[in-house]
Image (cartoon, chains in turn yellow, cyan):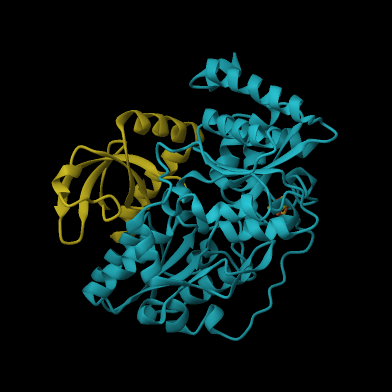
Length: 93
Length: 378
Ligand code: SF4
């Protein structure tokens, strides 16, 4: 919960609510981009962001994303986040 | 060889370890008279154990594990209050999975769910919002917990609920802040801390300025760090360099992610929705002034404490902690986890007695995971 996970914004899904689709280690998930949005939302598509509990909190570059992901995998935190993403599907059913 | 395979950049790690050792010698730090460096963030604690940094650094450096795991500092009374809310028949209680096994007086959320309470593990407060939209005839309560990294997310979720007029969504707010417990530790005459490694992702939200008092009023250095092992070593080196030069400043090792002034959108959302509580209770540390946040009256409709008359909205509570558990002393670095009489006996990750054994970011669980049987047998 305390460590963010890198994801890549693939599409803007709901501009009014500042929601976008992100790909996080192969898992797709809608995230809120309020904290990283500039005037042109479309400019976010293709960018790497650090995602905390469903909110993109910082723009990062591809190298930082790769390093962070590797560190999270080492700590077992990446798997934990992916499990939580999977559990959520269940919770919403 | 373990070292080479564990580190992404073993050459850099070795060079940093040598430089750290050089500084430690220069300061005159020894095993008998070590410098005490506190890493505040539970993610850092996890990283230190994962890579065995506490063993690899010069023997004159002692890591003190700080109170930076929000699950670990959650007092029992708050868990009891969660259970009480979750057991109401109209309630769907949404929580991060980390909080499920934290023991309460009567039961944990895990046990409450087994007993029939409708408790859902979610990844994000956004999922709780979605639950509220899909279940208009139920009360959805989100268990908000965490430091400044997760605070903006619940603030933004409440703002979204307000825009949509979602009347069946509320937040049980347990957000806490990093700087205040550091002040409490520094004011404690029993604590001997020589410098701090500051949290990376918290600082991404709040920036560097909230730590200024640590250098200004207490003359101690703090360096904000990323959580890769070489980040931590670099930050440690920066702290030791300040000590060697007789300086105390707030520095940033993690500038690639942490802006000096934090994230303005996050800070604005936090300021809009939350205000400081006069004080908030931390497990093992007691009440700490101004260390917790509550929902402003303007958003009282989304405040589970107000809605259900529970928590700080209820009469004063008394909070006895478990007998024989040394969580408080471990949390403040006075004892190592292995020095707790319960460690590995009454308290294991499978059946935790204290919250430090629950989350991988808790010092006791980290000890157990990476040095478990060996230390328990000792
Ligand atoms: S071993 Fe268990 S009881 Fe002892 S300090 Fe750690 S969490 Fe608390």
